[in-house]
Amino acid sequence: MKRLRNHLIGIDQGNIVLFSDFENGGDMWTGRGPRDRRKHIAFSEPFRTVPTVHVGITMWDVDNETPLRADVAAEDVAPDGFQLVFRTWGDTRVARVRITWMALGELRQVDDWDLY
Image (cartoon, rainbow, N blue to C red; front, side):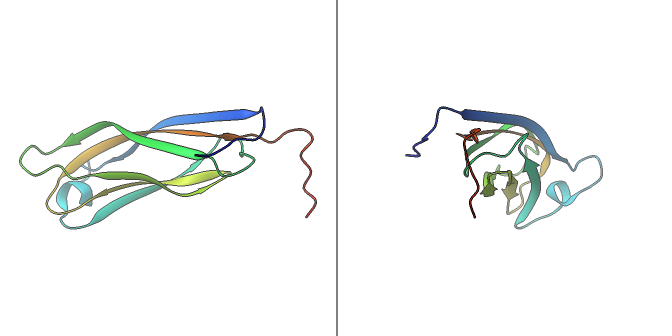
């Protein structure tokens, strides 16, 4: 469990179409094997410490003739942002994906001092 030690708690959130590969024949739609897409997400303002980030798929358009395989994650989380990652593998064909995210953590206080 993450314990937050101040009363200034921030929540930032967003929703992004990560890719739309059926329009241009991209590798998520035409490829095979391990594939991923990454996008750096910057928070609207930095958190005091590394926040907790939750991600989820809010829309996906997939081929109905191949198995559905997907992994979505927040990686390299820092106070100012993170890498949003979508992965698939095998013969799965993904036309497009929209991902939602939410970050929760401590905000800086006026009395916070950076001594070093």
